[in-house]
Image (cartoon, rainbow, N blue to C red):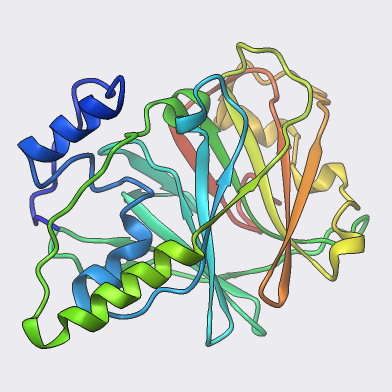
Length: 283
């Protein structure tokens, strides 16, 4: 990847011919913040294998802009989540401004979570303190983190990305095999939204772990907090707000992940907000 990043496309390609033209004109297509690039960082830079990655989607009028995150598990019992990012965004993470949050890691069985960003030199920068899963008293689910994303951020995702990646000659064949293996195992998982107005400004996700698939449907309002503390994050947040919640689950490796979704009223004050247990938005 180029150290100074790549510029975003001026317009989305209209058909396959437009995509082919973009790829012919430049080796670097799409922003570095793209979800289609970030999970491949260690393979591109160091040749390290990447496990199976699942793209998480929601239904929007523009289906190519519906991916809100990608999820994988590792051999050392970790779950990693890459959230969708707007190009050149400053993300609010645990009350501190973090430039271009890259991913969120859950370490099991310790249940510790930390967030990772990268500095201008490409070095990883971890959140100053870790957090743990939170188990609400009225649910069997364990809350990992909450994610609030403007619908406009989902719609502005680049639909075509490309990078020319240098590889050492001695390791080229193995790295190409690893990339093919990654592509063959790549999968999609759809997450349902509750009934909502078409003009909703943002989507509210609660990412949880469930003991098993049977318990994944045991949602409670505490999974997506709705008290007055949301005033600092959402313009027009009504007092005593109540909204419908939907839940979707997927069994991933040894884990069952449940994702609660809602489309509450109001306008999100930032493009994207990540909240962890014991912070202002997750109690």
